[in-house]
Length: 195
Image 1 (cartoon, rainbow, N blue to C red):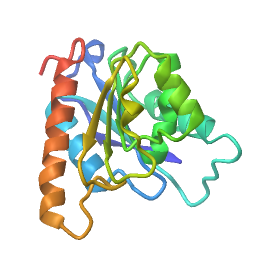
Image 2 (cartoon, helix red, strand yellow; image 1 turned 120 degrees about the vertical axis):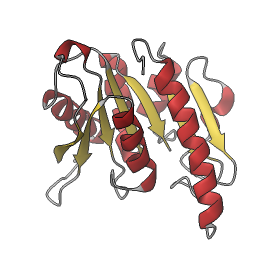
Image 3 (cartoon, rainbow, N blue to C red; image 1 turned 60 degrees about the vertical axis):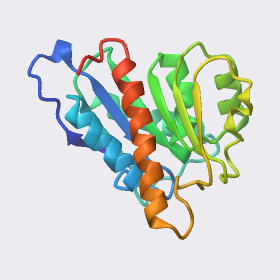
């Protein structure tokens, strides 16, 4: 795994830095449309954005949660030190949910693996108001079972695990525009996230 700077914050005062880390899916890189436009959005809002890329040598091993957590930690270690942190993850990258809970890092979780027991257990006991977005046709999403008391669960009707409508690029583009609007609202509502 490696991380690279997507964009540096436009402020020179490290105390004012807002840092976001993008975590990809196993087959969905940060250059994929959903993560790409979130990276661009955060850049426009003055965030320093650090993106993770899986390399051919990567092997998650028996503990993929620890593997993804290590990627998040290394990405945050490569950027300005700040308490204003956000992680935006897609699919496999959402295995960082337990790490984000332990570190109290805000999260936008795109197509989270809600079928994973450790992820589900963490979400059930969190007090963080994170954003979870998934498609109704995604077998790894269950809409939060509408039983979680914290966090916002947004289900996109007809969307698959890529947050797309199969065989309909225009509908996919339109629904992703709505996804970006929800993420924008979430980011603007974060404490100290004045744009």
